[in-house]
Amino acid sequence: MSDPSHDNKTSGGTLKSPLFWIVFILVMGAVVSWLPLSIIAKRRFTTSDKPRIHIFQDMDQQPKYRPQAVNNLFADGRAMRQPVDGTVAFGDVQEDDHYYRGYAMTESEQQGKYQTSYFKGMPKQVTVDENFIRRGQQRYDIYCTPCHGADGFGQGTVHLRALELQQSTWVPPTSMHTDIVRDREEGHLFNTITHGIRNMPGYGKQIPVKDRWAIVAYIRALQLSQNAPVSDVPADVRPTLR
Ligand code: HEC
Image 1 (tube, rainbow, N blue to C red):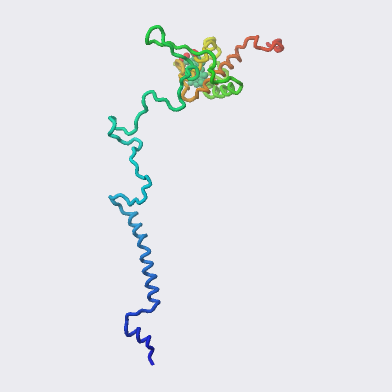
Image 2 (tube, rainbow, N blue to C red):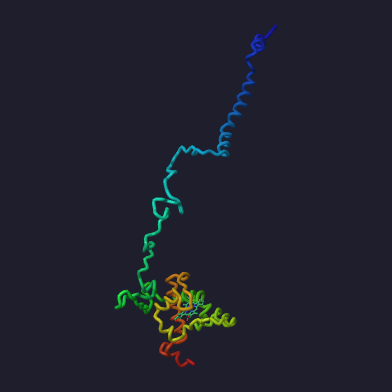
């Protein structure tokens, strides 16, 4: 006796077993699932002269000039513009002559001629207390000691070395304990630190304004240490002086 269902399958020849279809769908699924990956891979490794597909713009493209770019709108062709002459940076208005320069320029009787007058005393922006002078001492030790010496007499190591090398053009650093330097206005000392003087280089680039004033205060302390009038010594200590 023959099985009708079995007959059906073999005689028709078109119907396959369910297992075939499961395998078929799995294989096709595997093949199709590689399609997006291969498209992505192709896109990544081939070049195109068309812009890429960019669905969400999100203000990504904005007309602008990058640093150092060319802009023909301006005569000099530069996209980056120079600040207008006389532009002052925020918070950098250095109006106070005493504090920032140590001197004032006043027009003299002769038109167009200027004269410089140095300020006496410390500017109002600084308060001279022990901390301030100690700060000045520390800065002096860093910037000035190599030439002027820790005591200010001008026997710093740079000076001693120059003598050793017998440098014929060597100008010795001025002693802080001469009447000339003692009589200099505070503003003059400040300006010497800022711009240097004669053969001495300026230190304005390295030392901030406030520290320059601290050094000025310390120079005064140094000078006092070598040249104090007896009247400054407390009366009860005076007999012990030698
Ligand atoms: C590289 C060495 C050198 C260093 C560092 C130096 N000086 Fe001088 N300084 C000199 C020399 C040299 C002179 C004398 C210049 C001349 O007469 O041509 C001088 C002169 C001076 C004078 C006398 C100026 C006057 O009124 O005649 C003062 C004040 C002074 N220095 C202060 C300072 C202070 C404060 C510092 C530290 C911030 C400093 N110097 C750092 C070399 C130096």
